[in-house]
Image 1 (spheres, rainbow, N blue to C red):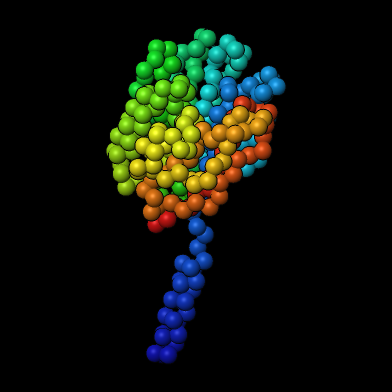
Image 2 (tube, rainbow, N blue to C red):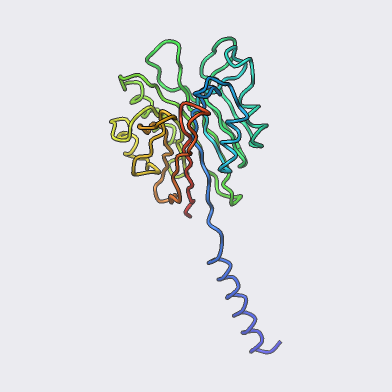
Length: 263
């Protein structure tokens, strides 16, 4: 091969590589936060198929579910995480926070992304009988190589925010285990955007939606208490925030957030 051909080949290879790099698809993650009210809609019906249709309608990569029953009398002993996993085709994770009516009650995650490990962390409790927790999963992003941490949680609802404040501190400790790892905190935080609790979170977390997106009550939402928070800020770019128009399947509306991972 003569010198001109060698140079031409190298130039073409570099050009193709450059086009490939420039044209590479961004790594985006579709996240859904949904308090499912143990599967009971505002019409009083227990309907997991309806919930599954809502979830499937936006094709999420990972879902944080709150108020989930497994083997509980009020929901006919159904293993809700397993059933919702079957109906949506997503892998279910569930951890009990309290024993309730002969079964378990807690948080769940549904994921189409690879899960490398997970654990359940107890959050500070100021009240007897309703232990709160954070379900922490280590996932691999859709690019097949980038690890990120996904924390699904549901904080206390009472007017006194002492337990919520202490929970913020515990979640900060949890995120501090790997401060440089892309991390998402998703769920029902039972706090308004302008509350002191969200102010504590926002010292180190970014909220996906700077403007108000009401999620509760589902029939006519006037308050936002469901969120997707992310950190470190430089590793994420917000693509979309949307509350789904679903007034019946639960007493909360689901929040869809699309984020892009930044190298």
